Image (cartoon, rainbow, N blue to C red):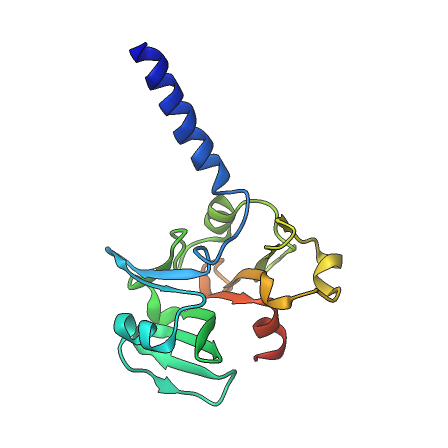
Amino acid sequence: MRKTVLVMLFLFVLTACADSKDGVTTKDLAIQKVNDYKAVVEYGMSRAEVEEVLGKGEDKDIANSVMYSSGVRIMYREDKVAGITLAEESKDTYETTGGFKIGMSKDDFKQIYGDQYLKDMERNLDYAYDSINKRYLQEKEWVAKAEDDTKIYVISAMFNGKGEADAVVLVDKRMAITFR
């Protein structure tokens, strides 16, 4: 009996871990402070909630965005997070909730987010996930009009000439394309 319970518990944990790679949710469009996993900024949070974590930021004229300390830029739509960008200044301070941070390699990115990316370019790697139909999009599907482009989630990293990430973007398709 005891062995059966342990085996079932092991299978449950194994299945739960496998499911985390099967899609993207708003929990994946989030960053956390390195070594403080309670300091999280997530897609959909209000600006007031963000500023409890990041402090006051400096408004920018680009994409309704606010620049915060340590290289974090938040893009807002109707006072809610619609995009998060990590820049080089965030290295060793913030990471995605998946564990990816500035300076890591493209192989590290693929290991965390899988192989269902749109296209693997030399200096860019993008994932697009349709949260309504619960599937990753292919490159041709990405350009097609979506029923609700705020439900297409994008995880993207840009890499420098050394192959190290120098920017990470977590955003919905509408913000990615229109900056609104």
